[in-house]
Image (cartoon, rainbow, N blue to C red):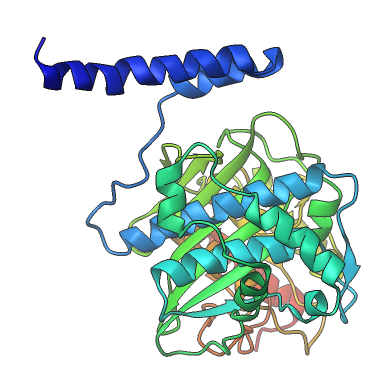
Length: 402
């Protein structure tokens, strides 16, 4: 055998086999089956990007929320979630800060001139060295463990704790209608996260105020797109999915993994042939959506099935793949303004899956105003064929008709 052939045989076949054999016998017995399966299961290479518009942005978005989701899962598995309280009394966990740092690090590495609108800022951590140190330990030890190629694309490890804090604080863009702006919600639905229910790691790219790329990781939703939607879905086996979309290219779902991106498949909203068989997705918290008015709307539409209540943009993903039908978020206050990071990714994913998303006045959601949806009130997301019907009843119940 020629020398070059012998070298190829050694490096491509014998050496990997030797490493796998040593790892097998040196690892605990409970890990050996997983070790074998991880080498036998084919994975999509993450370095092959298509030539379609926003291909790199989509890839980095998916990889970064996947890595951030690994961190959030680790936090959930700890007995203490590190919960603190912000000035608005909403819960925040170490997962929020860590996930935001990882996502912004990837964005800064790949798109250094882009602006970022993110939910968290690091003043709390700068005043609490112990909490900051705990988050830093999580951040520096979280990686896409089986994919060095993916880690390289994301820019590798954050170099220091002080850099981590600076990254968290760099999500302070005021937003607007000009340029490229990423919106991040590191843990959307923190209360759902704390109780083991639904939450999402959300990322979207705005270009001149228009959503071009959206990606949402839902660690506790079933991988199976056809699984029935129930309020008690939570952490467990067969859970974890990424929803994503690029404007004009459709929407996809794929299993959430710990390495390379899994294969994705096209998703679409389920046609509603009989309104009586449809179901609403709503927020769990009554303070987030007017549930009594939702009940009146359902009655007028002839919907008899109980609403499925869950936290986060998991609702957008669920109706986009046909596990649910209609998402209503009705105003509870005339002064409250929705945050753009709570809706940008989901808005695009639903529209690319064949849906329509408007506010209660029938206007498209306007992500170019700033950090909030200041010109909108409420959200209605439904298949295009029935959106007008739903909107008509919503406006009747809310007294918005002239």
